[in-house]
View (tube, rainbow, N blue to C red):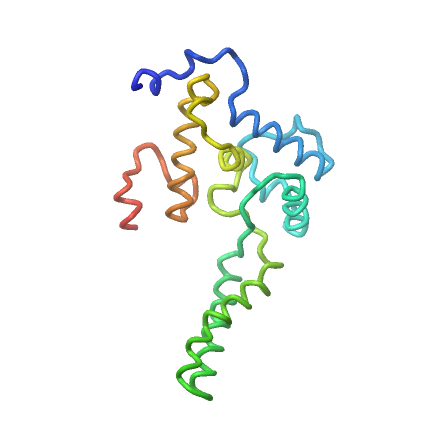
Length: 187
């Protein structure tokens, strides 16, 4: 098993990897939605640079409708803090004016505010900021595909980094091969 993990390329017959296939399919869908050429897309391209902010929600929804299951867009840090402050202040005012038991309404206020804030969610989440990260995100790992040589060692490392990125809510680039899990947990 260790030998397989060290050199999975020995099984490859120059067929595109699963992640490459996903990248190609994502590129085709993006080209269709954005009306651009697929050849101009590179794995390192960021969604922020590729899709103008005022078009991003529309494009994201069209990709979802086409079957591309990208994670939901997120609010910027400033907008999130603004809405969180509004929820907190509303709960404090209700508690002060009415009764302390109104503190429990913070959950419902948060849910209502989250729904109201969705139109301002225009930023791709961590782990889905580049086309490569999105392809990793969308590609399901299957051991049988790996055994066929359809996953490179770098793609497997990337998939593991992506899982850690999602779990720790950190940017993909902040997790390297030398990053220790215990350092991620303590940060």
